Image 1 (cartoon, rainbow, N blue to C red):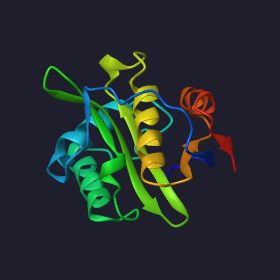
Image 2: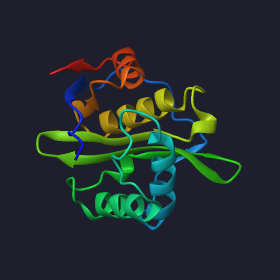
Image 3: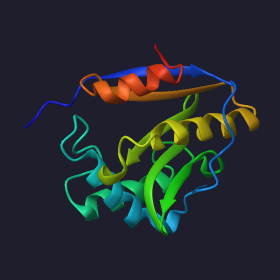
Length: 161
């Protein structure tokens, strides 16, 4: 049995200036749980977060279905986004309302699209939508060994709680 990875909680204050939402972004749909699960599984493979959505496509699809069903608090689909390229979803930022406010539950990018700034643009879109909805903060949990994700979140104004 492997130990659960150590995570820290990060927090960003909203609203803040954000660029306009990319026209290639749209809100995710619950009927996309299978596709989003498979994408998250591929995105997390080989990272410190591998296994966070399960070990198989079926487990990952079930994880996404649970998110849409409210297992991590009510999903905020109006503040969640997916990015498409040539008609396929290649990245996603999924937000729920968890305990003390909005939670960035998942952020993932297809390996073949990594490094293109999709994660940054998706989080900016999430933050803009949450600010427009009257929310004043966004929280997330990040694996301590996921240095790339931690750098991204610091650049976007998140601080450790």
